[in-house]
Length: 279
Image (cartoon, rainbow, N blue to C red; front, top):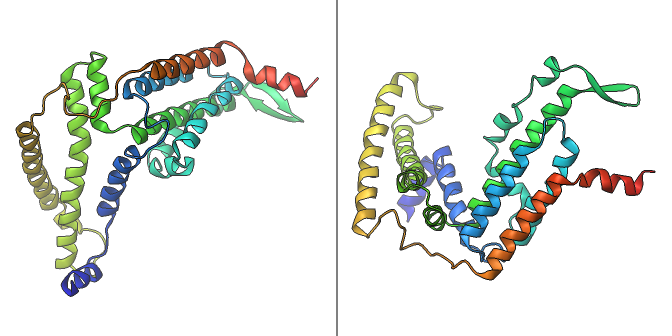
């Protein structure tokens, strides 16, 4: 124990170890108990696909109709007991890339669409905000699916929907391989810093050998991981996954959500709500 404490003081948790811990936290979130977690993975998958399809179908100027679509992920976050802030924290690296989509639209579409007092708002600003909101909503829906469904059950649902087994296997192994490579990178980073105390980062002269060793070590670990999966009876039908049956409750949930999405897409709900307060 004293030796382990000395090691922790000499080599504190690095970024790779933090990333590995966050990856494990996703599995912990999926193992929770809530009304959303108890639904069939197939129902959640179909609902998420329908939601993303409806969100993407909005026009580039239909910002008001798109805002109403925020209600579904926010409501499910509350029911599942997962904080909305946790979603944005986990997606903090991807969100800036999504927000950058359409960033230059105001430069190309300068025609004013409305006036806020004497301030004109161009169509480019509307399309920029619409594209950003679409990306954020799609990420929220995808995160909600991953945070309430174990990866094995999700892959089993994809096979149940007749998605090719090769694609599903690639998805599963990619998800597993990220953790394997991150673990190897954390071990190598710790070893490097123990040999170069006080140095920030990895020196540029060591980048080539470091990446080469990482590739070789991660390939070996990936082969061992795949061999272990085969020895435990893995194949692309995922018979070992904890698969909840698709019940009437799941069908009612999926049908109700999809009907609500279509209704919000076809009916200008934001305009109708606004007319109740503005005459």
